[in-house]
Length: 562
Image (cartoon, rainbow, N blue to C red; front, side, top):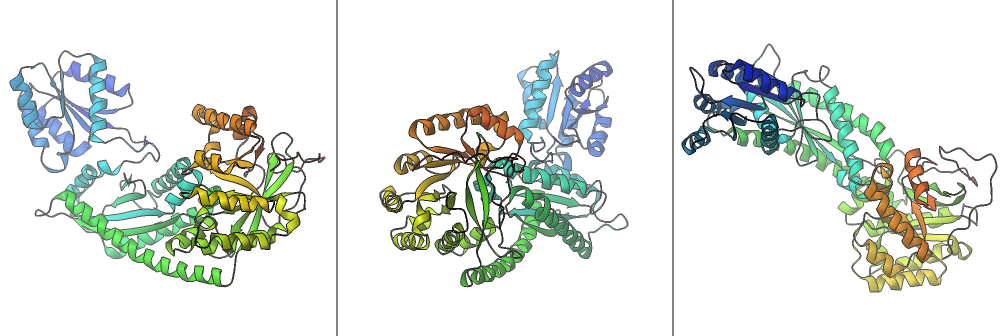
């Protein structure tokens, strides 16, 4: 939850009871504001912006029913109200409902009952902060923006959206996406006092792919100047793009694009507020769509150049035996031109999917990998990815298979492991077995890649009978703290041991992850803890955790035979 606490307004003419209620709420981490009359309570509701109101019914002057009805207008109308009342007759409950109350607690009440009702009403009203970013969700934006429009005739809207999140989630799991949103949310909050004012409102989209920033006008004017809005948009976009290019891409080895759209929101007595807010967000997203179209056109031209000029290179990442950290082989990973926006493979394949040219790109990557594998020592295994969408296609799969066989020297075929990635559906297992048998007849070995994160893992394992299974990095991440992941990995370990399959854990980044894998008896591993992908890669017989070479190099452990 954000550093800003949930604020609860308690309105009751009983001073002692008000103090008791406030103490109970504050013991649970809530912030409280108290009033001992209906009139004072209304004033605090307008000025203190509570997330919930606890309201006594029988008070001198304005009673609770009157206060609740007054709260149903303007920007306080979405604040949930819980009645505290000794009146339990049906007529009283109906009157509470007509006044707009969300719930009621009967006096005298137990503290546990009060806290439970508060929790349930807050949950139902969706005013909790997002558990990942610590920011308010869009469910609470409406109330916050209405409050700001009460003080200003116009507000600025910045809509920050991320592209590439879906691809990142498929590759590395939801936890990696959570980390991205956590970092972006923190950096957005840090712009307060610099790019935006401290009091400006930042929230995260309930759709899970965007942030919303609400800007108040300059203090000396009642409107938002479009030039100022455009300037803040540009600076915020530049700052966050630098963050993505640095902290995030180096951490996740993945490409995430960011766009910032902007618009203005004004008061209108003729338009419902919620509709006006959604229309303002839509105007901001239209600007993003225009920018996105320009970027897609540029990347399409860049992709055409990469394919036409075969500008694909290979980098190498070692795979080690976890028993003694001896290197058993290398995975060959494709990269686009070094200074290109399509350098990273996720960005490259994202454009290929948009252009419907994945098979063409996949064939080029495999051919470059076949050539690159020739530079490795003859006794090293070479792990090379292949996309089922191309290799298992009846229309041109056989041609692709033969091209790859011909490009791989015969003496290296027995050391080449073809990784079948699980990020797309395999729906023709008969033809898949035909392709796999053909590769095996030529000496190639087969691995299942991204096991545990794909579409048809168990059936693929049964149909292919792989030589290796590579655990998806989403299973490795936080393995040390997840009992469920440990049990799943342990089950796969037992299966692989009984079936004579080598089990490789991908994405090992921390010593804690490695310790958990060692405790589970996993045979092989790869990840940043040992080495980042590189080219040319210094060949070593042994690599210790942390990437250091061992002082002496024992003979490499023999991998499972195919």
